[in-house]
Image 1 (cartoon, rainbow, N blue to C red):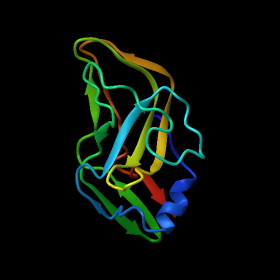
Image 2: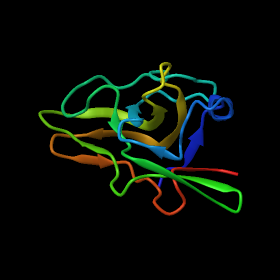
Image 3: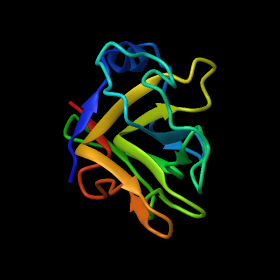
Amino acid sequence: MASFNKFNCFVLDVASALHDMKSGTSHVYKIYLTNSAPNVTNTVYNTPADLSTINGYTSGGASVGATTGTQTSGVFKFMPPGSDPGWTASGGSIGPFQYVVLYNFTSATKPLIGWWDYGTPITLTNGNSFTVALDHTNGILTIT
């Protein structure tokens, strides 16, 4: 499983109440695919660049779904819904991509939260699927 990395701006965005991670409806948080390496100083959607709409992938990415947040003993977990987002290539290939980026779709600036690095470029050929395996036990991310 790829490990989660946060963008530096996420810390200030949480302190500024930009994200409501306790209960997010569908399409609040989205993920997109990129083959450009994220930099911790990136701040908004499409930096790094999203893939173009093609062959089953839609620019802007996919909804994470309805999220919830739980806090126990001072540790907050940002929890995903029951199913994980993903894509299936149709009519050709999707990619290459190596990174999956999480961002807040409903905020005006579409601020970045974090990303997963899959270690090597991935290309989905026609009929093949890719699913982002979100952590349903420990959460997408934790705040301590």
